[in-house]
Amino acid sequence: MNFSFRNFLILILVAIAVLIGVDFWKAEKKLPEVDYSTFMAQLNDKEITKVTIEGGIIEATDKFDRQYQTFAPDVKTVLDKLEKQNISISTRQPKGTFAFSPFLLIIVLGGWMYFLMRQQKSSGFAKNNPLITPTKKLNITFDDVAGIPEAKEELVETVEFLKNSGKFTKLGGHIPKGVLLQGPPGTGKTLLAKAIAGEAGVPFYSMSGSDFVEMFVGVGASRVRNLFDQAKKSAPCIIFIDEIDAVGRSRGAAGAQGGQDEREQTLNALLVEMDGFKSGETVIIVAATNRPDVLDPALLRPGRFDRQVNILPPDVKGRQKILEVHAKKLIMGKDVALFKVAKSTPGFTGAELANLMNESALMAARKNKDFIETIDIEEAKDRILMGAERKGMVITEQERKVTAYHEAGHAIVAELLPDADPVHKITIIPRGRAMGVTQQIPLDDRHSYSREYLRSRIMTLLGGRTAEEIIFNQFTTGASSDLQSATEIATKMICEWGMSDLLGPRAYVVADQSFLQTGTVKRSYSEETARAIDMEINKIIEDCYQETMIILEGKIGFLHKLSETLLLSETIDAEEVNIILKSKEISRQNEEMLQGRQQRTRPT
Figure (cartoon, rainbow, N blue to C red):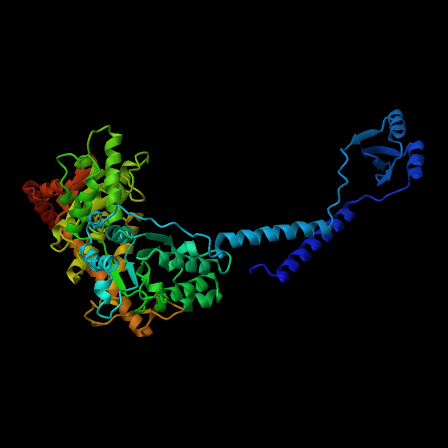
């Protein structure tokens, strides 16, 4: 029991100490008392200046500003004399005479403790109290899950275990007890778990990891035992624990912070229950997490979570299938090409694609349309990727001009580098925290990156700042995020991906996987190597910066034309950018400008 007799006594002693303190405080505030005859003598001598009457108690102030109190047996007689002398009189409502004794406080505390313990027992400790009600039949099947075919294939066998376990046990083997679904948020882990139960047609017990953790020690462990007892009676069935990292964190790391706490006891109970199934009990535990690195190793060993299924964001074909599933519930226009939408959303998860389609429907509804058009999907995607338009933001003409040249610099570098992702859209309308945005979309999903691609990415990021320097001979704070991203890429190229000719193929950042420092990064090199790393990072950024300067100075005419177009239209797409870059007239003007610059800078 959580509330022991010792804790109960401590509470009583604290309450008594509070009462004694209140009594002392009242005693300090109480006025000195005098007898009634002394008060009447001062009253007759006209030495009283004002009085406060509360019932039969009179608080008086004399001509020397001394205050005292007395008790008057006949207040009416005193009032008559006070009125004749024109003395200031005030009154107060008499206070109640009820005294709150320590014994009554003990009785109240005891009743409250008894009620609290009864509530605690009824909320989780009584084993015969039902914990949750399983969902008997789910209407979700594998047809409702799209974009992750590999994960579905691995889980089809789990459905077979539930439907026909004898097929697998007749040879002496045993079916897997647990399946751990791990992957980034929004990739469909919960939906997959429901689809397994829906395909198998078995009861589905669903809880979150945080549901087991309470402030009362022992409640979580009791809930685990209660859940598994119910599941065994409903076998075959599925127990689904979402966000299992809330209760399944490594006990080594937890012990360093607080020892045997409620989470650790709950985890111990879960480990014991997963080992306690009999041969005839077909209960499969499915858990989901996006932090598999923090889970206790005892959870991941064979015999508990036998299968670990990685669920990653879908590729372009997977995204198209996910969009098709959500498009069935919406009224789509004939101009909508879902394959193009899928190509323009690399890295989107299933949840983000569902949100995209929902935002598109809301965009169309705001315009009173009867169906969703491509422009609605584009606007919804811009809102998700770049933030809402800040139409009310007041911008000076100079700021608009600087932003236009900044974004034009990004776009020209991206279009002219063969390894860079092509430009999809440029805008100088403020969105989110950005004054403008140059949006690039890769032609294909990338799973690895070459050194040339990374260098082109750094040069594209530096294009905005370089354009500002060429045109205005100044720098603005608008390039801060670009510089941070460029520095991060260059640092990873040297420290993680071994892309340095000087330092060679070696990683200089090592993740420390000890129990107390899970996921942290430790340094594994000397100060001399650190200086060499800094030099290599600076060299990459400086080389990219010089190459970017050469590119933009060689295309100065295009930079002017693209910026002028942005100032007029505010938003232009990839087609308009290509038209400008392929203009022969601008190319001729650009050559003339370069020749003029060379003549001006040629020494005499």
